[in-house]
Length: 452
Image (cartoon, rainbow, N blue to C red; front, side, top):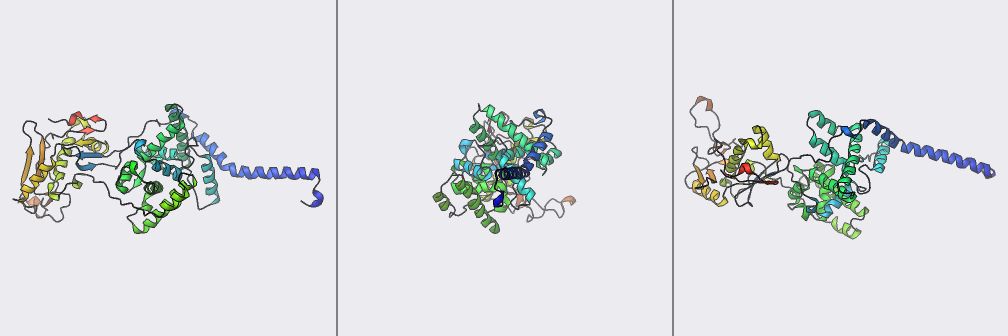
C-alpha cells in the first residue's frame, strides 16, 4: 500500500481483499478433497448392506509341509503360494515399526483413510509433480488384497485391481468400515484393532521371490523366523512392499537400489518418526544388506533328502496319489490337490529316514540309475501295514532330456525316451493303495489320514 492509503477504511478494505484471496487459495487447494467427498457419496449411495463381509479374513493359500515319521525331518513343502500366517506376538516389534514408518506413518491416528495424504496426493497429481503418491493407508492396502483373494469371478479380480477412482473410493469406504467394526470387536480398544489390521496385512502381502506374508519372507530372505528379525533386516523387508522386483539382492544392478530403499526411505522414516535415534540410524545404514534369498522347496521333485538316491520324491508322490483318491479332501481330484497345496497342513508320514537311506544303499550295490531295468524295494511294517520306505534305482525328476531310449518293442514307443535315470512314474505305487501316513493339520488331527 502507498503511504497515503494507510487510513482506517483503506486498511479495512485491504484486510477484506486479503481474506477473499486467502479463501480462494484455500478453496483451490481443498477442491480435490471436495471432489473426493462428492465422489465418495456417489460411490457409496447403496450403503453398507451391499458390501462384502470385511471382518472375515480371506482364505489366502497356506503352505503344506510333509515330515518323516520323526515329525521333525522335512521331506518337502507343497504350496501354491509360499505363505504361513503367524500371530502378532511372533513378529519382531521392529518389523511392525518399520512397516508403519515407511508405509503409513499416521496409521495409529487415522480412521482407515489418511485425509492429509489423500489431499496431498491429489494436489501433486493435478500439479504434475513427479513425486506422485497413492495415499493408500495400510488398511486400504489390506482391503485391496483381501478383496482380491475373496474374488470368485474374473470380473471381480479385474474390479479389485482396476486403476480407477471408483475402486479407490470403495477401498476408502471399506477401510473406514473395517476399522470401526474391529474397534467394536476389540471393545473400543483402538490399538488392538489397528494391530489386528497390521498383522493381517503382513500375513497376506507379497514380498517377492515367490514369498507371501512375513513368515515366508523372513525365512526365504534371512533364514530366520519373523520373531528373530533384526532392525536392518526388517527395514529391507518393509522396503519390498512397494515393489520387490526392483530390490532383488540377487540381481547386481538392483542391489544398490535395495540399499538405498532400506537406508534412505525405511530407516530414514523410522528416524523421522522417532522410532530409532540418530546413532542407531548411522550405525545401521553402514551394515551390508545381508539378504540371501533361497526359494522354499516345493513339490515331490524338490525334496530335501540327504542324498539324491535316497529318493524321498517317490514317497512324497505315494502320499500325493493317495490324497487325490480321498473324498474327504474334496469332490474331485482338482479340489483335493488344491486342498493339499493351499490348506496349510503339517503332515507327518510313516517314512523312516534311516530305512529310506539304507534301501538306497542296498539298491546301489546291485543296480545303477542308468540301468534300463528297475530294481524296486519297499518296507512295510508287520501288523500295522505302515510303509516305512519305498525306493528304486531311479531319480524322481521330470527332466528326461538325457534319459536312455525306451526299451518297449511296441511301435508306439519307438524313438521315445525311457524312464531311466529320471522319472516320475509311480513304479511301485501306481495303483495308489491307501497310504499309511498319519497327519496333523494346523487345526488338529486329520482323521481321514489315520493309519489303515
